[in-house]
Image (cartoon, rainbow, N blue to C red; front, side):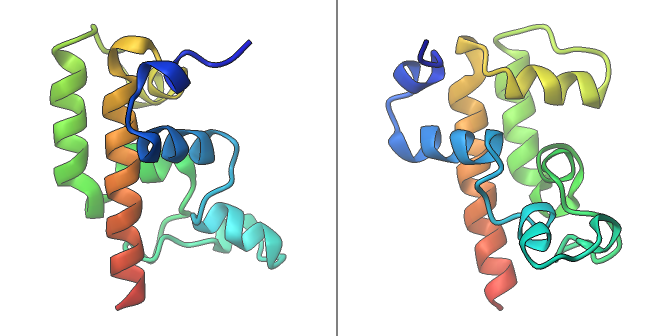
Length: 121
């Protein structure tokens, strides 16, 4: 069956961003490094320099996206009760409940654009 977020979200850039994140077809170092045979522990975030850039780091931790993340969390809190841990929130977000999927899509889309700009400089 088709994932609900694909029909719930009208903005195709947002659905594409979520899909790419969920299937590891993204530009994060955790995936890029895999293709270059870089050991996992050396696939560093270009913003932090000392943390592995995986999906969890990108969505929940990296300070580069604090502004975007704050908007995401505020929007989500208005729609659902968030789990008590950041891992719980991350897992809930990636399960794409209808009520918050558009906010995740907006976050991922905007944060990837910001990442691309930061890494191009």
